Length: 253
Image 1 (spheres, one colour):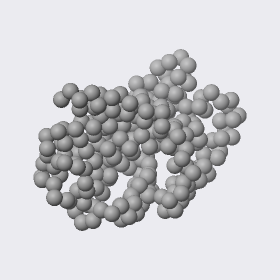
Image 2 (image 1 turned 135 degrees about the vertical axis):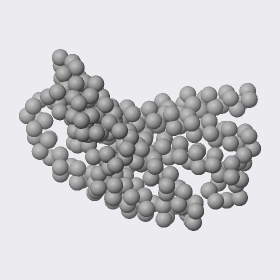
Image 3 (image 1 turned 180 degrees about the vertical axis):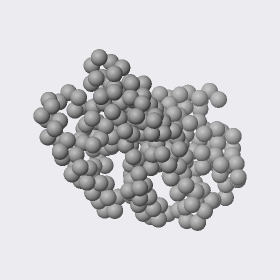
């Protein structure tokens, strides 16, 4: 994130404000992802996360030291995984159903946050322009009024919230350990396959970390193309109805 900000063209107060916005977005998005894993596990019968104080929006309960450093340096990191005791997921007779629900809880939360954020960003932009508070969305720190600056900050907050939550969702849907997509799919795999793939989980994690770093600092990341491909249908689901509604409102109001 620091590297990207320094090369973004923002300077002075604009750089500080955008940096704070990104930090808020990253911390909230990672936290809500982990909270929902723990909350759904709790609904399925496992109160491990609740007993460890992980069902809270307090980011200090979720931030991982290395993940936080990666978040600041590369703009992408991770929170501490919420502990889940699969043996206590007794809500359904078939425990695999509970495991699948817990696995997709985080990405579902990110998808919902992305949808709400996109809707709010469009509404805020429409209100700002329609009311004449702002005439265009230029950089923070230009000759905008106080009201225009506040509207722009809110719009940027919602826009970044949409972009990052969609990316976080797509990244976690990758069907490779230790990501949520894999934990969902592994419930369908034979036990021997799960044991074998589980043994590579740590190594695959380091490979993913290397790909993220290479992509951020080289400007070329094969991983980003895959994530973008996963994002595309979800982006269509979110943007199509909101854009249609915005188009109707712009013609009638």
